[in-house]
Image (cartoon, rainbow, N blue to C red; front, side, top):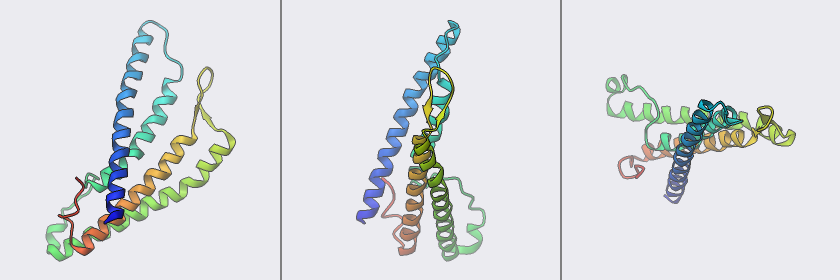
Length: 166
């Protein structure tokens, strides 16, 4: 249960961080819009927003998984009955864990390469480093995979109501 509490705490912290970042990003975009009206656009807005959106999504994906907010279809669940529904849920959780684990593993080499080579996005006055977004994809995917494993475990032991994310 300590692992579940630790993962839940980290998941909530990252969700709050991503939400705050999105809030600040809104003001940055607004400032760029106002500056464009005065024919003085802010340099690098496109690059900052593009990298920020990726990072915001992957910081929040763990919370979406753990809170049961990930997109899913359950039209077949009623056909299988309660035992079949549990088995399908566990199977879906394992598939989700595998998907995000593969995504995290696939991102390691590009992230290390972008860090080592000093890869940047954008030209001119403002160049945004790419490696923070790449490492956020790895970290967010790994956390999502862990949360799927925890959901499968919780469903397997039959304590899904007791161990809901609060």
